[in-house]
Length: 307
Image (cartoon, rainbow, N blue to C red; front, top):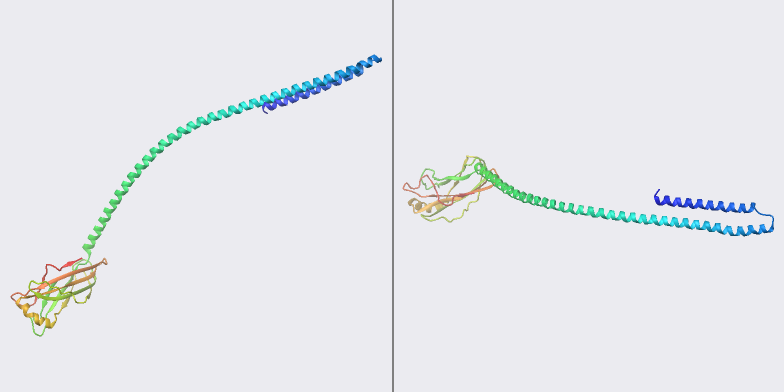
């Protein structure tokens, strides 16, 4: 129970006790007046006056006591309210001081947090910078490694792939020399000098006869001929026979060396890595003092290329 409520209960109890005492006193006065009543008329008149004057006096005393008790209660209530107000104001003041105290603490805590956050951001920025640099270096290293792998791969392909070409071309007569009845055969050796097979080997070629010192300009008119599969180190032969009428006309010029015979064309194939390959070849035949006999063609300085 609070002090204010305790005082209120004490005041109420005191007021009740005062009322009881006042009531008892009033009853005692009335009984005293009744017991001592005289026989004479003079005596009868006196108590009437006494009773009429004493009753208001007691009531006034009771009213006065009640008023004082009420005033005391009001004073106690006012004092309690004032004390409560003072306590509330003091509590509010303490709360404000405490809030100000913790606000200052929070301010400095925020400052310190911002300081460490700035340091953390600096470290993060440096980390990102070096990470970006490391990524660039790793990317460059990856590119170098990829290039190295590609070079190694290309080198392996270059070492292992098929190389199909025409290393030799020759002219051959049935009897070793020109004959009126037989035409010569231009024999082309097709060889795979690589370490892996070549597939779908095809060749197309043409024969041209031009003046000595001239350059052939005839296009390759022969349809590509499929030579099939060519294994590593394997050779196959492809033969061309000149047109009879043209051979009869051109033979004297070839014999006296005024004109030169050329044979040229292209070979296509696919290597073991399924890459399309091609080889261009070009040979010429210049008749010497022995005349037209079985002989080998010479390789031209131009017109020989490959991928």
